Amino acid sequence: MGVTFSSENQSDTNLQAEDHLALLRKTTGNDKPIAQHIVTHHHTDHMMGLNDVVKQGANLVIHPTNIIAVRKHLQEPLADNRFVRIKEASYLADGKVMLFDVPNSHAKHNLALYLPDHKLIFTEDMFGSSFQTELHSPNGWPSVDTYHRLDVLVNKINQLDIKVDQYVSSHHARVLNQAEIDKALVLSRPSKDQLIKRLFSGNTEQ
Ligand SMILES: [Zn+2]
Ligand SMILES: [Zn+2]
Image (cartoon, rainbow, N blue to C red; front, side):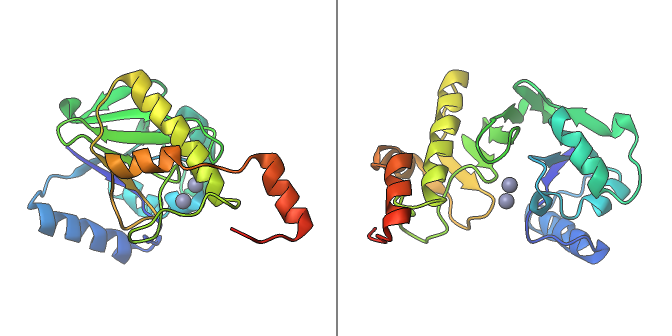
């Protein structure tokens, strides 16, 4: 069974979705049909390509709350049994893939994917840095919010008692390791009051 994700650089044209699938097949040598496709949350940049994905026959793995947005996004109605609903921490693909919901300030329900064999976590819009080496400065909005979301994610990881070595975030090319996550967690963050004060005093000092 194959499991795929929508990513922000996929478009809704057939060619794009097929290109991505072809690349996946080429790099992995896996030619099994894609049976399930994970929709982490309801934002449009994470639903791109879905029309093609369902046409190709994959079912959508999703938090039930986000089904309404997906139905609106799809050009054709999709039968109820094409949705695989994930509410609690669950396993797919014979235990190779674990999914759990991490409600946070960015999206009320956002599925995180964990590969136990590789100790790798994949999340979308929860933490990260687009910089090659450094983390974003927490001294401004919205960057500071990604640090708060990281807290939420790490708390959930601890609560589930899973070990993570690699942190992958959809909008970022770079994979973060535990040392980088630890560094991000201890960076001092300005309070909401401090941020508002800076905003209105015109002080742009970082
Ligand atoms: Zn989002
Ligand atoms: Zn996004």
